Image (tube, rainbow, N blue to C red):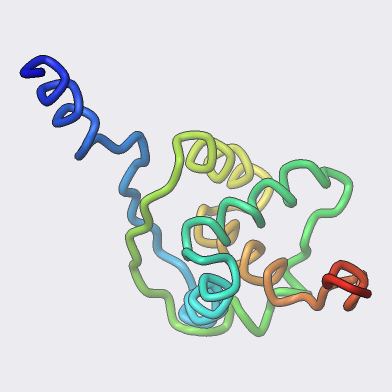
Length: 124
């Protein structure tokens, strides 16, 4: 019984997520906060959008489409993200210039309307 308690205590507070601080536009922060309510957590919303950006290589969000987001003041924010998400953000920053621009593209992706509309709702 004692070893079981010790094993459970080791598992209790361990998290494989990384706390990472990013400098991103304030408009992007607000969009990510709103998307966090839909996805349950801001980090989960970021994870979903980063995966979409990563898998849709042909679709690069241009600076012109994100200009309204990029024009807002830059602020710092810490997110607890999975190691894969952090790695993908770093890899995408080569295409977007900075990690803050990647998060602006994430915010743009999250702000777009659902292309399928209500088709995925139950009973539709």
